[in-house]
Image (tube, rainbow, N blue to C red):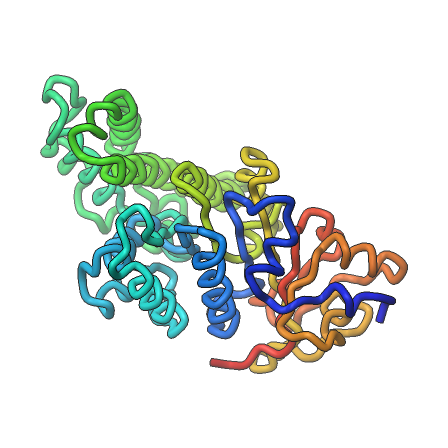
Length: 400
C-alpha cells in the first residue's frame, strides 16, 4: 500500500464530504458504478440525510423520470397520495421497488412534517421520461403545458387548441412502440404530426417564458417551475423521438447525448431554486466524456455532469463510488495493482477519500484500470481522478 494512504480515508459523513470543497457546492452529486443494489442506496440515504440536516441542502434529485417525480415531491412536501402508489408511479427504471427508495421517501416526508414550505426538502427526478426500451409519449407534458397557458393567457396568444394537440398526438402507442429503440423505421418521430408538434412545443414554451411574470403573480413560483419542467420535457421528448427515427451510424450516440442533455437542463433548473443533492450512475455525473458499447459500436457523449460543470464551475461537486466486491455478480476481490485494490486494503469501510490526495498517493504505483467480469459494474478509471472531487468506497457489497 502506498505510504500515508491510510491517513486520507475518512468515514462517509457530511463533515468529511464538505471538507473536500472550498465551499459547499450548489450541486453536490454522488455517483454509483452500477444500478439495482440497495446497499449503496442506503449509504446515500444516510449521507444525504446528514447533508440536509447539517448543511442546509433542500432538494434531493435522483436518476428517475422528472415528470413522474412530481408525484413523489407532492407526497414528501404535503403528504398527498398513498406511499405505495407514489413509489410505483413516481419512479422510473424500477427504482420504486427498492427498499432504499421507500426509506428515502419516508424519511423526507417525516422531515417535512410541521415545517414551513420554505424549509421543506424537495424531491426531484432529473432524468427524461425515458426507459431503456422506449420513450414516453409527449402527451402528458404537452397537455399540461397547454392547460397552464390556457388558464391564464389570452386565447388569441396560444398557438393551438387542446383539440389540435390531441389530434396530432393520436394514440400513445404510436410513440411508445419498443421496436423503435432499435429500428428507426418503427419510430413516429419524423411523421408530419410529430414535426408540427415540435413547432407547437417551441411556441408554447416561448409563450410560457414570455408570460412568466404574469403567471408567477397569478399562480406561484412553484407552479411556473412545474410548467417550465413540462415545457423542457415536451421539447426534449419530441427531439428524442425525432432522432429515434434516424438511420445513421451516429443514432445511438446522439440519443445517449440527448438523454444527458435533458438531465443537465433539469439539474440547472433545480440549481436555480437552491442547493441540490444528486444521485445517479457515475457515467451521468462525471466531468469526462462518457462512453459505452452498444450494438457493436463504441458510443461517446458528454455527460450531464460535464455539461453542468461547464456552466457552474466550482459550484459543481462530484463524488464517484467504487466497490471492492460484488460477489453475487462475480466481482471478486480486486487485484492489488488497481485503484479498487488499493482502497480494498484500507481499514476504514465504507470510506470517502479526497481524489487529489488519492492520486498523489498512487502516483508512484500507476494503478491500472480494473477489468470487471460483469458488464453491469463499471470500475473507476484512475486517469479520471484529477476530475473527481472524492471517491466513496464500499469494500464488500452484499446482495439485497
